[in-house]
Length: 230
Image: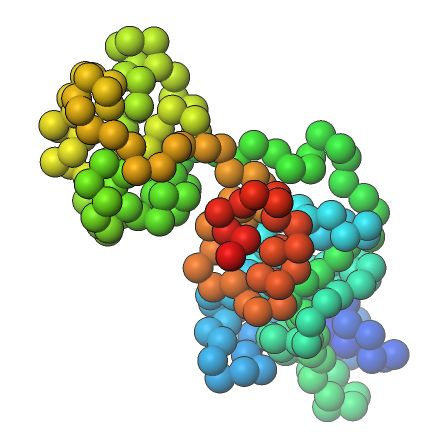
């Protein structure tokens, strides 16, 4: 895999750095290659948990962005054993290839503004279906994403809003059967109460390839009554 446009190299001191063009001091450009330390991890599927220096959770980042943090010396601290190795350019003088080992949890220097912490997750069908575990909340059957719809508990035509607290996953059959009615009017009781997931819950629901260290860390930050605490 290529880390484009940024490339990695080692300077004469052996420290990794970023560059985007050949340098006059004998450095040789080479495409960066990422490899997994564990055979069970597919490099392209791994996302890294980004924190600020105080340990507050920010978001998932890809290996390219994580590598840039290391290369810019912007990493304050890390958690977990390295899971990916990114190999870069080769020094013409020493013949040594640069490399950076990436950890699953990366805290960058500085701190996030209060307004940027715990934002409201965007309401998308993908996030909604993940929240409801791909279940139709009327019939209780599980469906693939393509066979689910977004249903407004209180129909929009009756004043219902397109918010987390007013939408549920529903199969095509149940959505059609409920039509422009409330669950009470349609005699179709909900199997669960819709809710707005916290930012931590959203991060867990949005990533199907969470590593063990990442999950353990995120679970310590879940709301006390979260459905994902189990």
